[in-house]
Length: 266
Image (cartoon, rainbow, N blue to C red; front, top):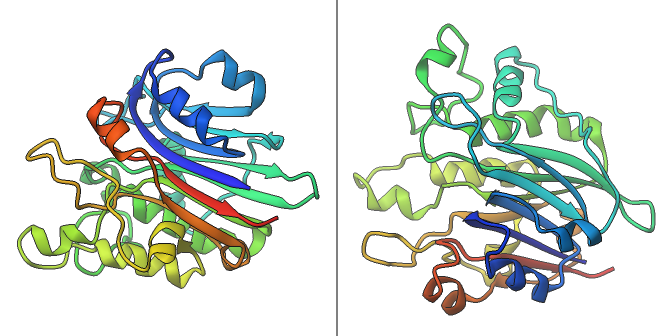
């Protein structure tokens, strides 16, 4: 089984990036920043899409998407003990695009295409809420990454099945030492996911951070902002994981993010 996650940077339906995806021959695709899914993909995959939320609270023009060669059900029951977290999940449903798939062998896969904005949740949305169970230790703000983590914390044990969570987290451990030379919680985001029994396929397979993002200022490729997290059952079946097409993607300006690929044994 091959899983691909990719922020396609607002790809249009005629973007050459779709051919890059097709050549990878994935079984499951978790996409961020796409405008519309080409017809040839709709013919092959089950597709679920939704619009992420912009900073002003309105839907973005682009979409998140889950594509699967296995049948999809858009009813993954993510629910938190905290009412305000459930409210933010509803508000950011296109950022935390969740669904279920069932494989040919009847195994349930819980899929999330995740897109965290670079900006934090506006303070006025959270006024009066008890944030103590959710906030990062070293960051005064709350991001959509924390909403995702709390939903998983409160839901994973009751949902069952295996988990695949891929996307653009807009977070890299490199940020912790580059900006202000003090922690801003990026390592804590990874530590929290690991504590839930979820491991990032890319860095696990490589044994180190794998850059996935090209900074527009200076063109450096040093940040890993894209991840595919899986639970331990799937992690034990991980055969390989990596990024593809760095020269193709960046030199042709197909995206400022690289596709992340993870292959699992049957």
